[in-house]
Length: 116
Image (cartoon, rainbow, N blue to C red):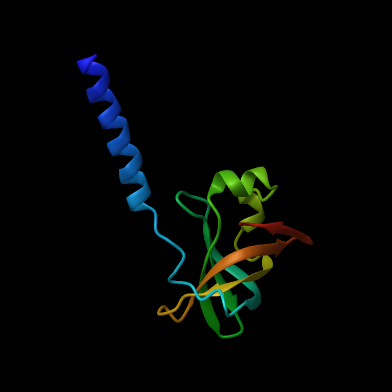
């Protein structure tokens, strides 16, 4: 019984630590919806969230996507986010980082994927 209590405490600590490591979305302004269209300069299909560097006109944006498991389950494969692909993203700008956007949806190759 004592070992079970110790194991339970360890599991609780690990779960809460993971929750603390994940950031909230309050740093993005959900009152300001933006739509950006451009070309992917770089992408990452990694945890905790995928991302793309999107060149839109003369500005490069860091666009935060969903976790890879969600993107995969909704039909957005890593191969779709290749360098040079034209995409449109809709999302919310970061409140303090001038070139960052949290994407709600992405359109690539004629297909729109809901990310949240």
